[in-house]
Length: 188
Image (cartoon, rainbow, N blue to C red; front, side, top):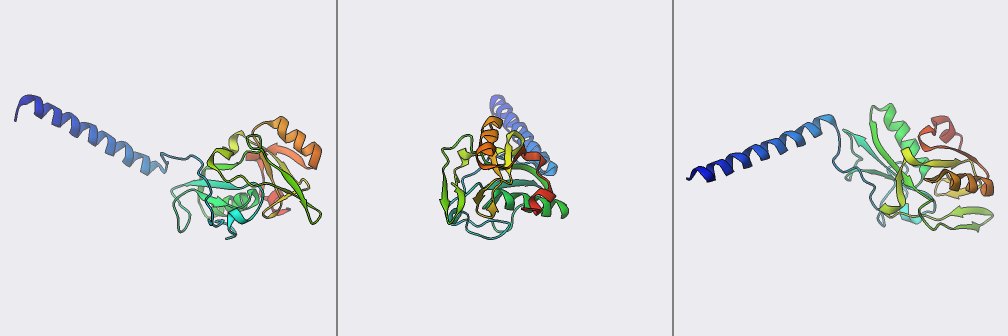
């Protein structure tokens, strides 16, 4: 074996060992390389209530947890509504799970529709991955007259002006998505 080949092999070994160390350390820290929103596919069930997500209107959500995964499928946990998203997070936090990232439908980035059905105002569903944004960047409208999968919807917007306009038209209060409380969700 030539000296050049031996050097190349050693570099490959060292590079490979470094990669394994980084991946192993990442696993120990409970982080995920990929924590991007995913599309919610046809027939998938809500990890909180079990409903088939694409059979219901309104905002949806998904959450990645550190060191924990939803039962029966790869992360993230997925939800038929923002209400189920928050209920699941609150319940899992009590069980010791730590949320790493939560995404909700961003109504500032989609062409949404509202319709009246049986006297209720219903908002459209947008399950594609491009329709989701991190809760860190969202303002929500809570307690409006608009409904989704689980009744009164918590409707998220990345543009706070869009949220204010929505609340002006449909009622409700605006607040940062990260400030949704267990009490607020419990009262819906």
